[in-house]
Length: 303
Image (cartoon, rainbow, N blue to C red; front, side, top):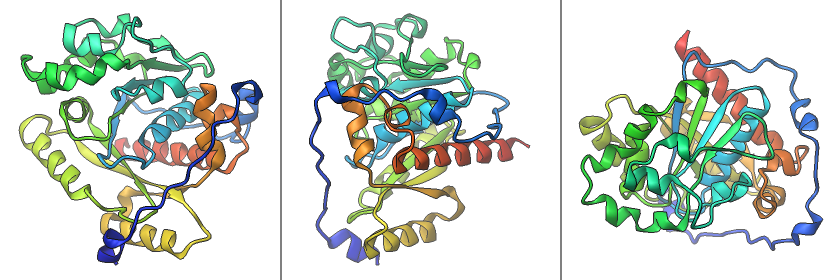
């Protein structure tokens, strides 16, 4: 099965970007009202890196929608955008042009994290450490820095992350120094895996990197969560990929799967997560369920 997945061609969905003037404005209360359950609050801040060096698997989409869903249920959440493209910052409606203080200054110039963290305008309780294009050169600039692999961890330790329940770190699609900084700075790793061809391609390299980081830089790091994304229930392939991933990783895989959704793709063009853009869509409901499942699993581990 795995060989068949890895030898097939990759199929991607393309979605046209609609004009921003047509963006629907939907009440947060409609989203929040979907679940009356009391979401468990972790006893201390959970720092979770969301990484997969394979592009197009839904890292940023997962980061912003899990963050928004958690924040909508009265949990304090910080998203750290480590991708030079700044897509997480865009999706949260946070300015990230070149003149904005960003995570680049934190990593390269030792600027305090408190100077760059801003509130996301669409969702209460949600904050962002934005990325700018300056971050594109950080991989090279970090090479000559002292303790280059742990500069993000040092910045987080110097910041009052205890005020947050979750810190979610969104990574670029690579295994360079930015991603290594994210792995060193977190205690948990969430890996999004798309239910498409080549689903497991390159995953071994990521897991080897995780083991190296655990051995030499961050012994507390663990793969705590795997989330299946881009699930198309109409295809047999999606079910086969899900079965393969669950068979390989077991209970680490969330029961919730994220379906393919045009609404999920559209939301960032309006500076929103799908949780506020269209809270009744299949994508928003699925991310809400995934966030709740992740929150409950974290609470169970601390009991």
